[in-house]
Image 1 (cartoon, helix red, strand yellow):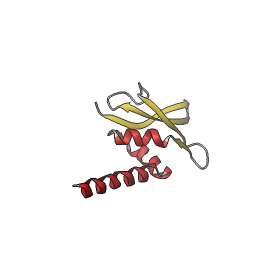
Image 2 (cartoon, one colour):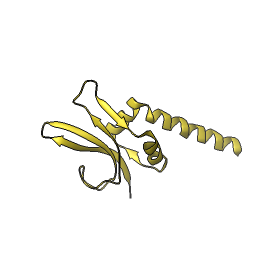
Image 3 (tube, helix red, strand yellow):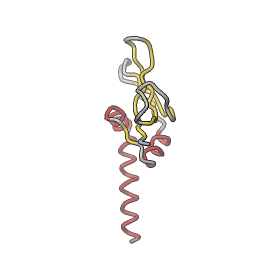
Image 4 (cartoon, helix red, strand yellow):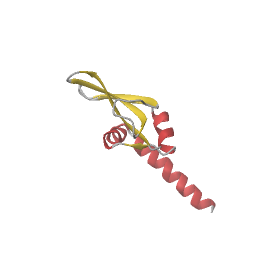
Length: 98
């Protein structure tokens, strides 16, 4: 089962808002989800983004793949950079112990 971190569209017609969710890659865009980890509202200026960093980092460590749009949001909030730092720190620690 491939797990994706992606956007789920909510809101009224022509007034979208999105939830950042973890879902099976085979489920439809607005279908069943595993966990809700944040939200994104592009209709306000500046765009409102709220993401639970600890949940995202946990899912990324377990192998969940963010979509392009979610990866962009994670870069803007700094979560993806933090994940890359912990990933590189773990890699250097494992090479030092060997």
